[in-house]
Length: 313
Image (cartoon, rainbow, N blue to C red; front, side):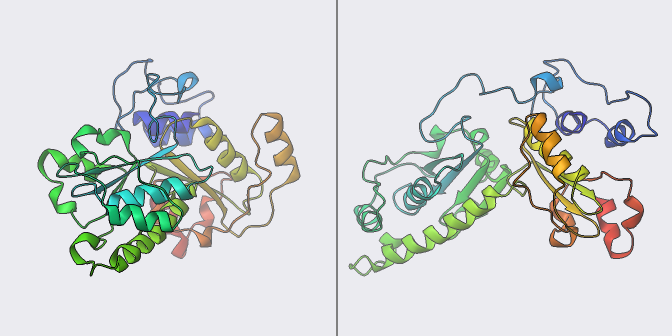
């Protein structure tokens, strides 16, 4: 709880170290701000842990994207007529039970969905005939965690539009423009359709991970074998983070073994299910993917040599 509040409100991480360390001052914790203390360094309102991530934002409700989703993706192209429409359709079709919202828009403005795009997507089992062609100006960048420029037009996102490139994840896919190059047999449309599908599948795999660039901050919990303490900390952060944009993973410095049955049992008693968690080795992760590294077992002295980079996050 203290760690999550620190990430939200910018308190000193040394306070977390002291509060969580057996030799630290009893009951110490970074000072918590009031319920409406104003925006923090992550753009959130600093609140006490009791109200951290407490439900939907202002009761807003959207059909295809919005606060009811864990992550939201915006696909952009020039006129929201082809490439961004296909990507939008693929994500809706492929996301399954993943909590990923999606919308698409034109940087210049909306026109109409190309008949070629509708046709080739229908051939692939995805119906985008009822999709509307909308303007980026009708959306708010802060509603999206991931922004994809489908057309290599990221250079058009300048001035007051640059905020779209500053979302947690921005990618420029640079897909070819089928209407401009298709010889008349829809072959260009089909190729770009398939390329778009592959990229959407990669995007969904990234968003499935419990950590990564889709989060504003990422935490790694370490212990010797990733069998108990780091697993409990990992499970509790996932349970407590609410809507906070904090990714998490855990690993063993020596290596992974198996999650202890005792840890699974007591966490289940507390309402947190870690039975499906895997026990992984620190060597399988990259330190640069994490902003915060926590040694749960006082084993920071084992992070030396080529492992010392983990202590320098």
